[in-house]
Length: 296
Image 1 (cartoon, helix red, strand yellow):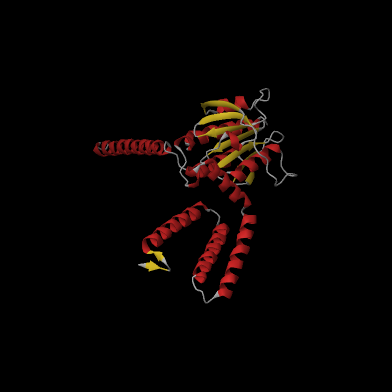
Image 2 (cartoon, rainbow, N blue to C red):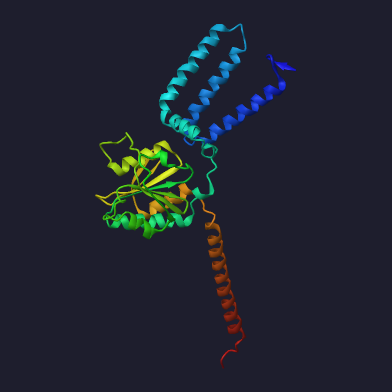
């Protein structure tokens, strides 16, 4: 059986591939306005495809094709950063990032949040500048930076972060790259953003630049002049924030960690066992008091 001159099995395969591509696109879109634009564009593409199947509507087909071309140019201008990121990921073969499947070493846990929050708070109090890049799924590589820095490959700890950003060390001016629970490198030079050049310093522009290019990494920034804490995510900077606010943001962005559930369960079980002990002690006291005879 043929449909518009194409065998049915090939048509079904075409529909499956197109549906999979559509699901992948919609799953990668987080902002509502971007989702609306993508829906409208796909609707125009589908309309153009249906109109082109009819040979008796040449004028309508030309108009719809012109609308699709104009919308394609407009979206290319609006989404130039996203399209550049897509080309980079396809060129480097990082398909796991496109599919939203970060590797195990990129998955941070509750200890990552604790170490980052403690180190950022202490650096803020002493007004020591710092820039920490946390890779949560972008699979950052040395070619993604202007300078890949010095390889560290050590277990993440707040003490090590404080030492790396000490003012008398040669690596304190660059960024520290964190993947999962490990510090990969230090002294990393990041690409700068073009937005807010007059408002922000070099560290903040570097945090905006790397998060504009890769949407699955976040940057914790400590200002050297004021000690202000900031967090960059997807090309947006939230500042100033407190240590508790930073901890909440990191928990939301990194997500629930595998090691957090057992600890929470253990805490709940400890609380329940303590409540049971208190209840049992109270019942024993009430029984003993009821069994006593009244004084004459």
